[in-house]
Image (cartoon, rainbow, N blue to C red; front, side):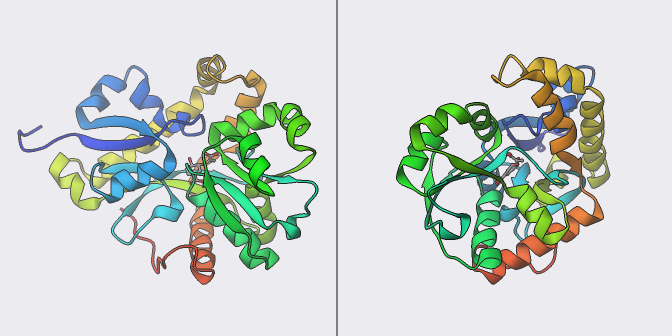
Length: 286
Ligand SMILES: C=C(O[C@@H]1C=C(C(=O)O)C=C[C@H]1O)C(=O)O
């Protein structure tokens, strides 16, 4: 690589769900070779997008809510779900029906799920609850508000300790937001895509084709190694191995299909209609 260039700086997400996408970057035989082209660091989804938008990263796995006209979507991979995603939970105290929810504490890590929740209430149910940003802590959240929005590993962990949570805050409805979107639109629920600042690629002397190929191959190799991923993640998260396997193989969908792209467009249109996000008139692809 010429002296003036640097590897592509990648902002990745440190949850279980992106693990298959990261396979080649984290495992032999390709990790060493990829380290010449990419330098990785891990953060929460909302911060991932901030780093890309501020120019501190060149490529990021970012919430679709954070896409701007300056960023190009890398075709091929996504974090999506064809129905139930499991890791996006809206927990509603049962003293309150969904329609009666007035206050929601939302995990500060989220961007897409926050906008999906706003769409659910303001567009689909026609109500207008207030949102409070809160670190992911279901009991503390539900002690302050009618409902709590959790994403990623904290949502998976909350499902495992459902009884303990309900003993403190009372019985709750556990709503899978991806399922709510799917039953109302007939489309997959899409959370995140790989997005790049296109001008950054020339600095790193990487072609669009090479980048797309590296990311797609990593996803494909990750999915072939599901058993290894389950083994590696089971000691890290107090979740049954079978639940991890089901999550990686049935809940999360890793291919950016034409239906996912339509869903992304509709999500951004609805979010614009209710003033949750700025307009994104056309999607830009690498
Ligand atoms: C499926 C998930 O998707 C994540 C949810 C995001 C969001 O709500 O902004 C962003 C990135 C995704 O990795 C999850 O974390 O549970």
